[in-house]
Amino acid sequence: MTGKETARYGLARVLSKRGLCSRSEAERLIRDGRVRLDGRVIRDPRHATDAQHASIAIDGAKVVAVMRRYLMLNKPRGLVTTLRDEQGRDTVYRCFDGADIGFIAPVGRLDKASEGLLLFSNDPAWAARITDPETGPDKTYHVQVDCIPDDALLRVLRDGFECDGVSMRAKSVELLRAGEKNAWLAIVLDEGRNRQIRRLLAALDIGVLRLIRIAIGDLQLGDLPKGQWRELTVEEVAALGGD
Image (cartoon, rainbow, N blue to C red):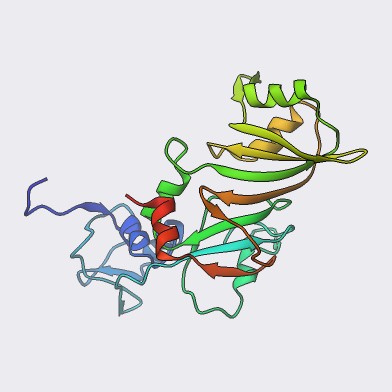
């Protein structure tokens, strides 16, 4: 690319990159004819657009890049990680009711039954670095299981195994404490497959009683109350997803 050339992306992607809305929401706005590019209505979400200099308006209001936001939430159990749920279930956005934070999207996911550290941002490039399975930060979980794992079982979890043609493993597994019928494990993952811990344990006939994500990289959940959120510091943002 020469100095005079600028990056061009699909119009929906440009709207998302400016932190205004999700790409799927941008696609809906474009198809509904509510978006003008340089004064002209565009209905193709993939229309090539100058990412830096294009003049874009939605419903007649000019779109400008919004302030980047980076938040962490202590997700309660029972909420789904989505902006809107077709089944009408409560979502994680309930935790932001009344907060003037504009559009933010989850960075990764926790399933309905899981709890703990969940990130949000309107910076898609930063979010992509966090969720990259190759280079993203490790994720640490405390998991209560319905058995007392012995050393052999812990070794199987660490070494990994093939299940239905899929390689399943944890980066590390440590026994935290054990009771009479169940135990708590610390499990670290270095990739982010859907429901990975539950699938890994289910393959060994181990039931999950609770699953709490306590850290992403060096960022700790700490004593943030359940259902509460806070802004990340500049240092935390850079440490998690810096270029």
